[in-house]
Image 1: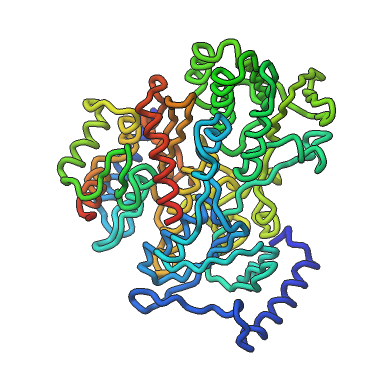
Image 2 (image 1 turned 90 degrees about the vertical axis):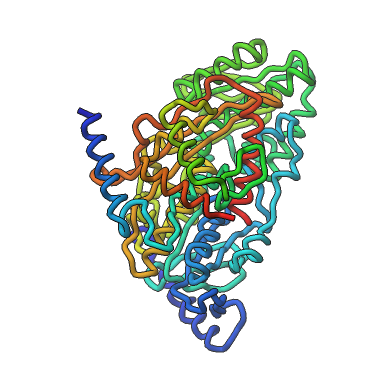
Length: 104
Length: 435
């Protein structure tokens, strides 16, 4: 029951994400995806940080997207990313990958 | 505004009028000198009160995401920022105090934020004005309140101003961090350190358990025979329970004594004895008491404290107060959403959520719910750490962020790798919030 409800919420979110401007997480063209700043606490503002934590700014878009998906489905081990990646839809992961790949 | 004292309201109105006159007369500090945006167009002025992790982050991201079109005045009474995260390491002797201390210059230079060092003494929500003790009044379109918490000292009998001089909390990093470290250094080998924990919610749920671990590590390596006694008003370890209990069993078995359901209600500062609700007594050469907590005083002044007379309730899309319009609230002062801790990481995320909502509102758009994430690391010795993390998504029917099903969790075991990440996280958090 709970699962069904969550699945509905999940698909609503996915629909909202596809709907473009005015949705939960998808920015209008040229605008910042605000939720990308979730990553900044550990990976630095706009993904730029020189520390023990792997940098994500300017990395290959497909690499970022596939890494997040692998963390999410458990095929790539991690200390925390396998837990955090499960909080994002595949559409959101694609937006994050595109955003961070563009940061120089 | 229902809690606003009518006398205070009249006083503020009078002050507002005199400030308007002062502004008209061109007296510095009262006019709103516009910081030119890159586009040369200003869409509003936001005053942020409190430059901790929440307020500083909100100020920075308001400038960043509005491309400079929102003017930001950040009011903070302290000249320097002292980080609570990582301060337990100082107590354990694993970090230099100076590394916790940061300036606010980055916010000024990199982002054009107007920084005002003063104390806020009044907020007039009708006129949208903030009053300070030494820097005059400031008008706002939107106010961001990031006041942090204050202690309810009255819940511990005997914990008066005099007792507070020698019995420390060190739960706001600063001089107390150094003073408690000194007490621990002065403690003779074989002595006892007592840490009391209030009932949740309080700032940084795993913080006391990390502190106990850090100090136990210090005793193990420097003060043989010394003990750490944890008196926890909660009925169990409320964060990373299995991990902390595991470490205490494997590494600090003869050092840490953990006593759940032990609520400190009185202290004798001379005999250095604390008493529980049930009349149990415990003595320690070093007492470290954490009284219960509530939203800081300025939240009361603003009239936004509307949950149990302790915390401030908000709309979780905009983080706007449910009590007073145009005031957005962040961080520890909030009545938290389910499973959302009062943490620095979370306060930073609140700051971003509020900044995003305000940019949307001042741009004439509807603010949209966003996602927030939390991660709290704890160092359990000089090298190894553990974490708890979660992702929170706004639930449209319940109107509150809930942990995404299946997301988040804790470490499998303490590791050196996570210890390195803990210290990297602290450095990155300071930069993301302050520069």
